[in-house]
Length: 285
Image 1 (cartoon, rainbow, N blue to C red):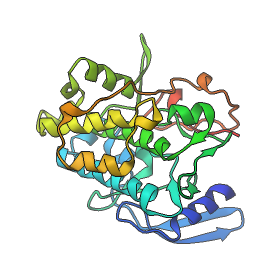
Image 2 (cartoon, one colour):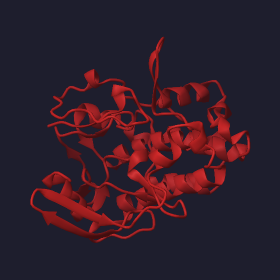
Image 3 (cartoon, rainbow, N blue to C red):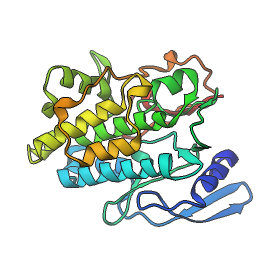
């Protein structure tokens, strides 16, 4: 069951587009107050369900599978941002919105919060929507929405896939610990390989792993204009570029709901794999 706004937004976003890494809308149904959308069955559920939630789950995902999933997500976003006209900003890129078919091909889903834009337009709104932890700081604090907002969310998700760590982890002594901060610390101390998921037991190409982490960090930079476009992110993930040449600045972060200068009208939604209140999905007006 969906709200009227989200139902219409999803139909508008998906009715005329088709890509290997997007869910395909097969139909819709209105039955009284119920609003139903029909998609292909995804045998491997969501990335959040299949990958997160424990070491046993992550052991099923070797490096090749993680690389292919990361690239698929990047290509799907690049298509939405740069090949579709008007282009589409998803606004809620996160592990639970990435579905996996029988071959573990990633499919971007849940376009209920998506926005359509023509040319180089941006948007400023007091209705901020998304998931804290994945939410870009400039959008969360000012409502300024651009394609770089999705780029930030992708960067967080990429770091999550490579590291196997939660976006936000709660520690009794230190409180909330954010993945982007951990990645930044590893970068500054020249210990990026320590960020790679230990369940891989070192069975991964070291240079490629470092490159993927650096691309993730480039995507979450606090300065919006320094983040790459998604087409450029795809290139960096695939062309084997020299990672030593990459210059990376400090990541942005929304650490707490109190940082937001807007009123929250909807209760937070908690993911089963993330206990911290900082990761709740929310919408504000």
